[in-house]
Image 1 (tube, helix red, strand yellow):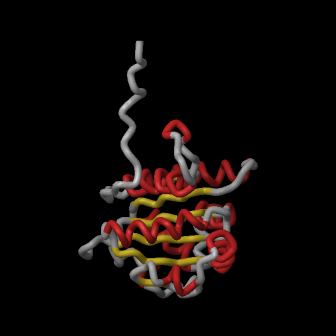
Image 2 (cartoon, helix red, strand yellow):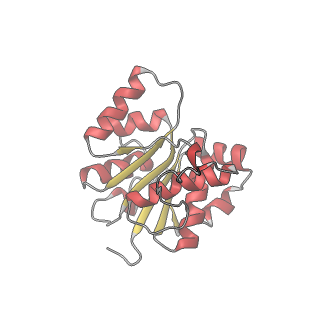
Image 3 (tube, helix red, strand yellow):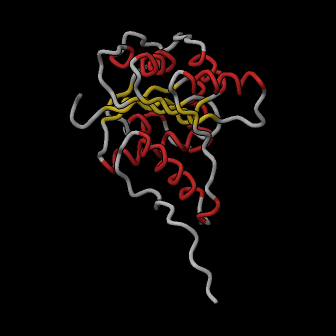
Length: 195
């Protein structure tokens, strides 16, 4: 494994592009992993619409960017050692492709590699409400060893901003990979009530 370890970040067209972009920003700041980015065409549309960030600006946050159609890229092979992959956000189309082994683009192929190599795969699945196909695909991915982690706000922390909500979720994501962070305090229980 390289030093620092490699982490693949995928961004799809589901709402929540800020999760993927912020993950890249935080990994760059923390220095905890070398990032390999792959974004679907709809992912680029969501990034632009939801964050106002230009493509070149987002690409500059990653250590390496891989075109979605490059199924011969390094991250398409199990011989390319990584910590695993985060898809943030993960659309239901991409979830279905991963659940059914449809490696028709580099994002789905990289996820498939993580599953076959028993590496960590974390999917920030974004959809509501969920239909039965969504639920079954989540079950399939979970049975294969993936982690389905919808980005839900921890309101018990009383976040003061959207950034705080996003960072809390990303802290939990980084914990899945053993990457140290300062994004979210650990839960220590409710404070004692005053008499």
